[in-house]
Length: 104
Image (cartoon, rainbow, N blue to C red; front, side, top):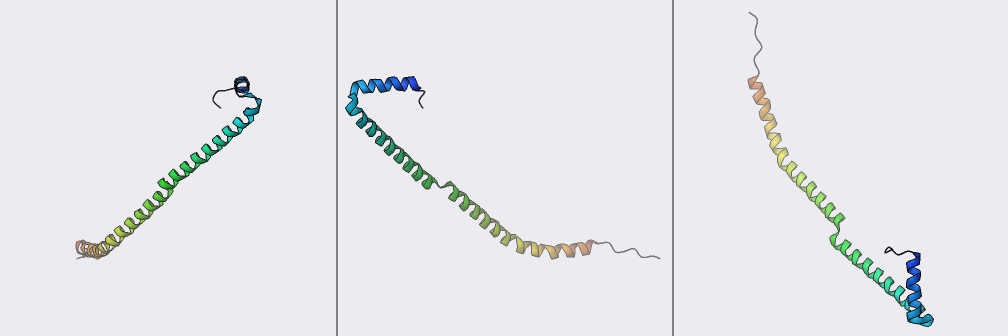
């Protein structure tokens, strides 16, 4: 735990028994146990709240959706332009193509 071994814990237990007495020691142990349990619940609720507030997975999904929307918007802009450019290129190629040499 905190670098405490069995001998250290036994010394702490004997000192607590001497200070508080055998009648109050179980009550103190119960109180300490309840306090630790409540602290643990509180820490878990804070961690849960932070996780729900940050929501990294939700942000990632939103960013992916925005990226898809941008890609689709880009395609909708580029596709009409390429449709206009393709016939233009075909006519340019046809104009530049050399005529076959005629035999004399």
